Image (cartoon, rainbow, N blue to C red; front, side, top):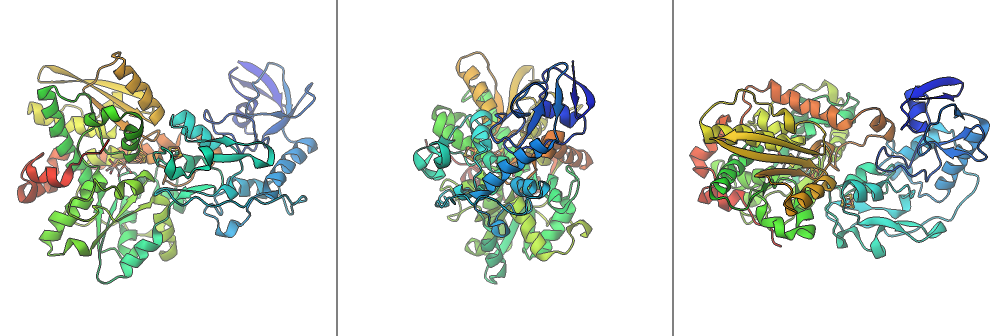
Length: 573
Ligand code: HC1
Ligand code: SF4
Ligand code: SF4
């Protein structure tokens, strides 16, 4: 440990702490902008400067290691003026149309301007005027709002190992964006949107779809059906001031009914269906010793990553469509037939925590009824806006239930939204179906938690099955390299592109850097899903009575001809 003095307070902290961490642990606020813990620790923006006794210049506290006996002052006139000058300079060339900005009221730069009490900008800089990149199906990039903090660059590079964003030029001409001024749609971006949630300002956002959804609801010729992903219920409440980790399933359903959707279904139902299909597909591959390891297929960021960077692994990916797509296909086939509705008149809206799901919904491999399985995807943030436009107080809504039949789901499906959940759900079913025995314990603790690479061994009929779970593309890449080098062997691998799984997808509510520093938002949101699993009477996909009903009435059995037609696909290399 190291003891230093900050603003007259003696503070003892571990020796690997930075001055910023030491100050925050002592309850002292040092503002930051470019800093993102363990991701972007570069000391570039200089908003976090402090005075250190004996040093001639002000020091960036986010990269300054603590030393024994160090004397630090965080709130002198010199410090305040320097910080203010940094923010004023940023604002002087910033497109300050705050009222019409996506991040209005949720902007870290706006917060700083407010906290520093900046009332006017003493130097008027040259304004940037660049084209807003709208070409991607998922991500919009507005360079005029960019503050060059590099947070998106670091996330894309260091967490995701994708590296399609970078810095170009110098001085006033410095830019952040894809190489050679290309559109983000022209580089191998996987649409995960992790750059969006890292951005402190409005320079990155999702491609919005709200107006299409309102138009569909108003169109009396359209039967508009909505489905919600597992992870929405774990985060939507944050948009309405509820504490992180509050589960809002029933209120979310009540809100959707009031928005005017004809039916409100649960993507979780389709996640149970995925487990049935994927579980049986796995047992078949295991029997034949073919295409192992089998990789999960529900994350479109992971699929796109494979297409660009590991096309040789595409055959190892399960042929199952993702739950959102299975749900769309079921709505436009089984549900349409049962209710006598022409699938051409059905409009399927998905609410997803994910920007890559917008891309997925437009893929031509996912249109098995002759129409797109899913017509449009809203993020959690977009749904929150629609709710705010129409509902007075979300928090006082009653708890309501999803509509039958496609609203019935199990505890296994709700944990899909957190890393390890898809594998845990699959193991619950695969074990019981293959052995005919009941599991003594449903929780597979080894594959829970936020460790980058998790492993478990499960014995099925005397055979040891090795499984692995990875989240974030950086970790996936590490594991794939080990598999390819022959250092590791697995039968079944779950990959989710976002660190923590979908609960921290690129479409989830913004969380500012101060909160990210004080808690692990992945763990907070995960609690909501594990609690919902625990609270469910039925916690295994193969015991969902509505899943059994749909096989009896329509699909016959998992991996049948009909399920292959509607629920499976092949991605082209
Ligand atoms: Fe996900 Fe999935 S869990 S991919 O993370 O398999 O988006 O929540 O809906 O489709 O079910 C996302 C979440 C989601 C699918 C399911
Ligand atoms: Fe990188 Fe993901 Fe952003 Fe694409 S969406 S630029 S892959 S972080
Ligand atoms: Fe989307 Fe989930 Fe994959 Fe992230 S992990 S890209 S939120 S599906």
